[in-house]
Length: 438
Ligand SMILES: *Cc1c(COP(=O)(O)O)cnc(C)c1O
Image (cartoon, rainbow, N blue to C red; front, side):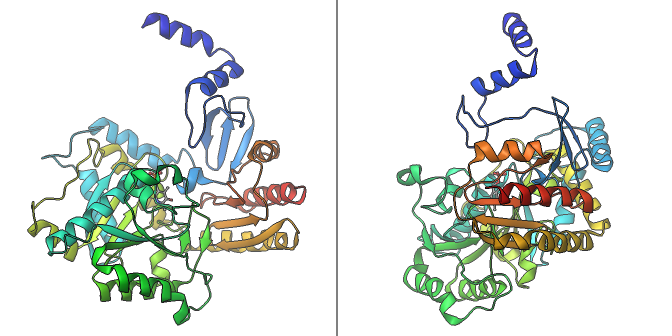
């Protein structure tokens, strides 16, 4: 042990060595070891600034993948965690409970649709999706529909990286086509074509209607990211589509599952994106911004119809229970984050961010290299005509003092809601400069 420890210490003396060790031994998201893609070591972070080990400061345009909505090192969340560490950092949730979990469940029930009354705490977004899929199958079995074990999903959907979640991600464009044979076979329809402010016509629902007509006896649930399809293409679609999905689900006895892991907690301009359509899901997945980006925690909520059927069905319990379920530290961070959000002027802040993003990025749509520019709430997407070369573009952004990490053809900004006008300006002008030179 000492030998390993000593040599590890020795290896990490300079930043370069330190990064070298990382490259050789540590996987990052969707990465390979010894990859040539740039990697940056973070020293600390505060507010919207990420400080690198080499002393450079970057303005964060990613909110660490939708999660850090109040900025880094927020004194109130820090304090809540310190307080909770002095009480209990973790305790099993089987047979035991605690105040942070009860407070958080009460908050989630209060701020989501009144029909959602039961909360399952999961470890990550992907697990929250697994839980949702299992709930739907258990519900259907409990009401005598055992053959309903499949799901309907949308092309360009992204629901996570575990096996159940992968099975409902876009089967072609998704990041999981390699696993096709190992995945449950699901049903897919085209993504909604009508944009956020557009009105849907009957033809927009035909694919869903036909799919349900033919296969509803096998379909336990329809899973969708309401209004904003995230990692599968950053596409904003019409609220009409959700309303119609609700009606069709009711008609065909299919549960409606909303995955708000990316959109939850204000990102689209409403506290939850389904509010744009004024409808409720039967099952709702939350994650990412739930703890203000402090810790991994997610939740799956369901209505009484779902939990009562599961409670009264066979085997009379819901079949899931992670070791770190409802971790008290994570729940304490989530409680502090939700309180902060609700007492802030989040709607105004997000509207201001939206207006600024529209004004500063819409002109980019004139460039020949740009296919589309779209903004909703605190999300701005510039879709290029060509796939972006990450190896060269990320260092350009870093050079300009901003942290942006495009994928595929998409360059996007989704900052912490606390970002100031000049900071956002720095992000949009870096984006404009880099895109204009592509
Ligand atoms: C990120 C994401 C997930 C997966 O969450 P993890 O915490 O990464 O497992 C699922 N669904 C959506 C919509 C997401 O954006």
